[in-house]
Length: 166
Image (cartoon, rainbow, N blue to C red; front, side):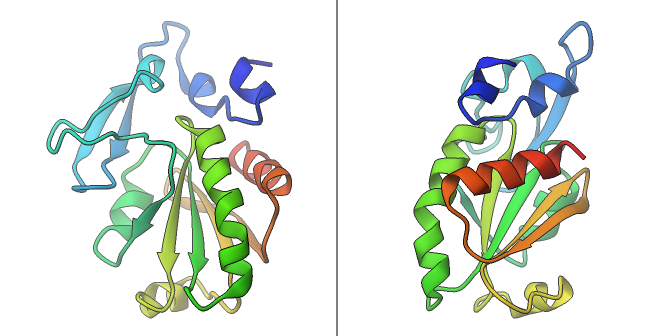
């Protein structure tokens, strides 16, 4: 087990490396939407967007909108977990600190994002979101797991790790 796995993190990025460790991964910038190629072996080295110079893998959840959602899902080589939430939702607010902690622990191998269902009802409807919070894990542009209801950080990390390894 590598050190990030021992800390509750993900070794997904290391599992994507070839025997040479020189594979490039596509990472879509959460700030400007530009697609960047990052060597898998350098994911944890503070990669910056080539266009806007912002951090690509900050270790914090980022907001998705209708303009960024599909690009983030379909154009990223890293797994992405999306929290479908709303500001008025008590369980959503209760889970927010655990989601933030999970983002810190799973970076840089897994990205976490949030989609406000009040602002983007069409996307919520497209994915059949009936209750919030609902988490959906995406890998290679496809849904690989879904969980409704708030989770503490331990259960959240377990759920994410079990779904991105499928």
